[in-house]
Length: 279
Image (cartoon, rainbow, N blue to C red; front, side, top):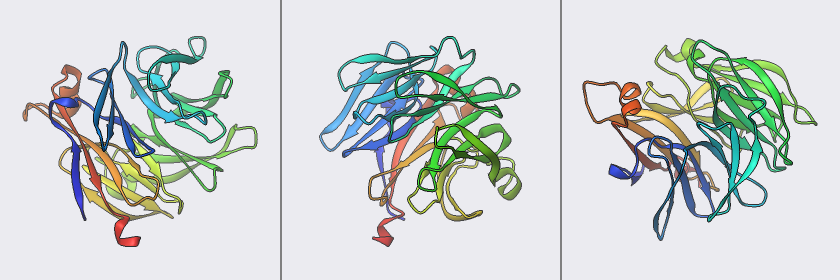
């Protein structure tokens, strides 16, 4: 499969939440405390006072981002940041990944420890927020399939993808198993970032599974093996290119999950082209 390294080296410590928009790839370096934008004209780095985790794009075209250490969603217009939703009264954990819907509704993870269930929060376009789902085992990547009717949540330490039906009011119901990675693939396949395809399949970054998998109708239909910890991914508009983020430890004797706490990791963004054979 054709591939090309888009960015690596000292420029990235950890690469979360890749998002493609209008010819540019946006990546959150959570450990480097910066937002990185990669385009044909080069790479632009936006230093941050406090890191952002999950990101998405609002109908206005602004980036919406979950602050890692502050219970708040902020907006970025390419130059300045502003508050989108203050979640201090609702959140006592840490904000994780998010997804922004075409109508401006945002679903965002509230992550606690691997032993404490997390929650999924719904943030209305006006900024009001409520709990959409609870009892999630380290909620992580989010994707919407089924013409906007189904939300998929990666429960990392449960090793599974869980589905919810999105109601007309945006509330979630009909919770069900969508794909059990641990059961079907093994205990090291723990889902992190995920990305939906138009055909209803979902790409999954499998962390210590060292692979990106495309899952459809209960089966793995595509697989990309990588050297490193598989963090997250996204597709471009026509779904010909998959942008995948990975990380390796700078000390071979220390696992990447420990090395990242000391900022001793090197992240990489690679472009794979699984869709070019179909177009």
